[in-house]
Length: 86
Image 1 (cartoon, one colour):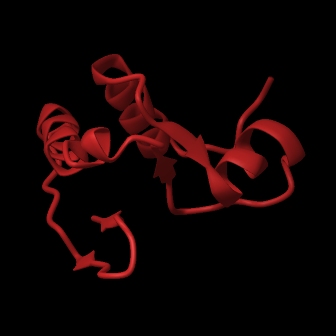
Image 2: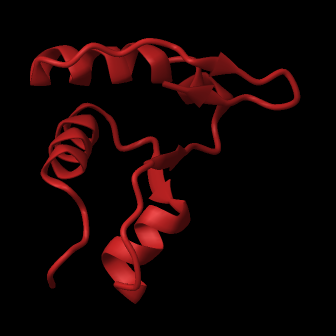
């Protein structure tokens, strides 16, 4: 099935899910890329139901970014609930 993921999104997700299976892709990008094929989406919404896995998210993103030759940095930290924006 064709997907609306960009090359960069696809590369990131491929590398990320080789490191961990503890997260899942959700949100508009998942709906658009794999189900509705209705629009392009820039962000990747990755969720986990386990707070311990969430605590490793930033290092996982950093490892994937480094492998792809990218730079990642934390943009925001939310106080209400566990969330990581990079």
